[in-house]
Length: 504
Ligand code: ADP
Image 1: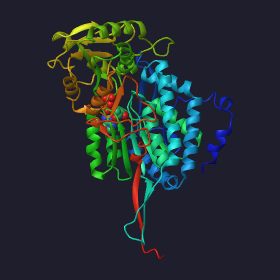
Image 2: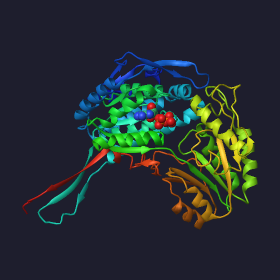
Image 3: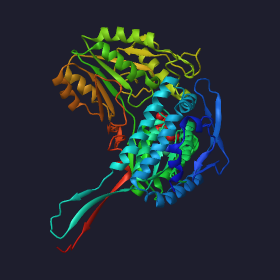
C-alpha cells in the first residue's frame, strides 16, 4: 500500500516536481479531486485588493457524509500500518513541503495577505510539525505495569482513536493544519480537514502534496465550505458517531458551540481558542530586548494571532523609554503593502469585518479619552483592508478595547507600579493562552511564571512557538495541547490489557 511514497523519497527532488502546480480548485475526498455534489462554489479573495483568486467547491452536509465514510473506510487499513510506515509517509510529505516551500508561501500570501517573508516563516514552521510527528510516531509506546497478583501481566496499549475532524482558521492556513494532521496521522488516525472559508487554497495545496507523497485514499480529506455551510458541516462533524475526535482552532464563541455539539457523541475534543496575552515589562528589565519582542509579538501577521500581545503593562519607571523606542521601531521596521512585493513586511487584515472591528475599538477608545501615539486609522491608499500600526495609552475600563482580543495591529499600553497589581490585572480575564514578561530578576521570573494563568509563557522572549513545545491554553482558551510529545495524545485511546491466570 505504501510503496509509492517510498519511491518518491529516492527521486531527485529538484527535477521531479518543478512544474507541479499546487493551486487547486476542487476538494479532495477519498483520494479524488471532486466538486461539491451541489455543484456550488464560492470565491477565494486576495485581501490586498479583494480580487478573486479562484472558486472552490462549497461542500455540503452530503459531501461531508461522503468524506466521513471515506475516512472511516481508510481507517480500517490505515490503523494496521506500522509506526515506521507512518513515519516514512509523514517524512515524504514533509520533504515535498520543503521542496515546494516557495510555491506554498506564494499561495499563502495570495489568500491570507501576509507578507512573503511571513509566509515563508509560516511554511517553515508548519513543515516542522510534519517532520516532528514523523519522528514522534515511532515513540508512541504503551506501558507494562506492575501487577498486584503474581499470575497476571498488565499493560497499557495506545491505539489510534479513529476518524479525526480538523477545523482550522485563516490566520495560519498552513501551520494549523500540519500541527493537527501531523499528530493525527502519526497516531494512525485518518482525517477530514475543514479549512477556513477565507484560506482553503493552502489546505488544498497540502492535500496535493499528500497525494504525491502516496497517502492512501481517505487518509486525508479536505472539504472546502463557505461560511454559509460551515455551521451545518461543522455540526455533522461534531455529531457523527463515526468521527471520534475533533480538533479545532478558532474563536472562543465557535469553540463553545462545537464543544456543546460534541457532547452528543462524547467525542474527544481539543480546542485552541482565543487569547488575550499580557506583555509585562518589569522595572528590572532590558527595554531594548522588550521592544524587539513586542514588535514580533504584537505585529506578526498584522496582529492577527491568538498569541499576539494584546495588553502591554509597562512599569512606570520604564514607560516613557518603552513608548519612545517602540514608536521608533514601528516607523523604521514596518512597511505595509502588498505582501507579495519584496520588502513589504506587513499585509492587510483578512476581511472587512475585521477592519471594521479594529477601527470601532480604536475610535471608541479615543472618543473616551485614550491617547493616540501613532496610527489609529485605515490606510486606504494601500487597499481596502489596511489599518495602520497603532499605539494607545490612557485606556481604562469604560473603553470597549480594554480586555478585548483585538486581532489587529493595535498596541494598548497600561502603566503599573507593583508586581502583585500587574499579575492581578494580567489574570483578570476569562482566557489564558500565552503571556510574556521581561525581567532580569531571577526570583521574580519564577514567581511571576508560577502565578500567570496562561498555558504558555515567554520570558524575555516574544516568539515562543515551535514543534517541540506544548501549545495550548488554560481557562476559556481551550483544552488539550498541540505539538510536543503531548500533541499525539488527543488522537490516541488508552487500552488497559490484563492477562490473567499465567501458570509459573
Ligand atoms: P474567526 O472569527 O477567526 O474567523 P472562527 O472561529 O469563526 O474564527 O473560524 C475558525 C474556523 O471555524 C473556520 O474554519 C470557520 O469556517 C469555522 N466555523 C465558523 N463557524 C462555525 C460553526 N458554527 N461550526 C463549525 N465551524 C465553524
